[in-house]
Length: 302
Image (cartoon, rainbow, N blue to C red; front, side, top):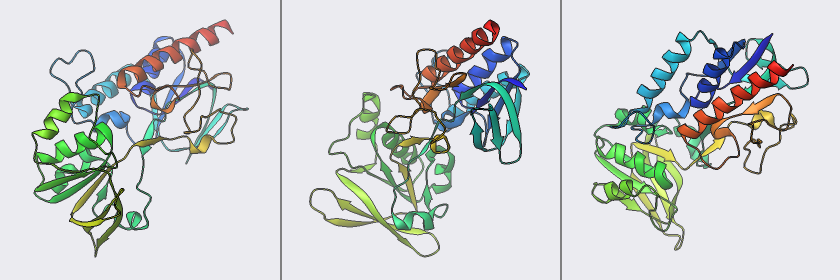
């Protein structure tokens, strides 16, 4: 029997684990793939305290992983397939665990284009992580299907290594609160096509062409592309929570109170998976801290 099981090993989940173990709670951290979450994919993080010159996402999350391991947190890898909130039991693809409390920290997953040809070219030219797979497309023609800052940063990353980069966005104008990236985009070699969307993909064994359509005129263009980088947003990893009693908003994000508790007593949620508006590493870290301290208080009161 664990005091707390944390599902998801991003910055929020890792911070929760650190605070839980420091509170002498029997803690289990479950992660489906690798610790660090989406933060690991960031080319450069410039808004996290303690790194005046910025820090690569992978480097930051590696330090987080080392810290949580050194603290003695029990970590297991496996995909959570089911949670019985009445019995407080968590099931993975090969094990099950019993706990007093749960912290949900599953984060987000990449949103797909939703066109029929997308599935065929996954891993054959269609990719969703620019930092992970971008280097494989050095000196090749690339297209970024992107919105907002993720689309811009993806295009700028590829501009350093690819033969050509075309950024296709449904927005009528390229905008971002991070104006420094708008300036960098203007000085780059990236071709920007606005008010357009990807409607089809062509190729034999691998991707060769990306078909786009102008949202206003319906005009179609065919772009040469050996790689298509999809950065059109993310959705929460909460599909398996539907019908469990956990209250979600229309977007599938978990509703929480000021203690990070969900609609079920003893079940908390932190980070990007919550309905809170700001999706930042700093806010996820704060959420994780808050949830763990509230659990410590809850269990101490018992």
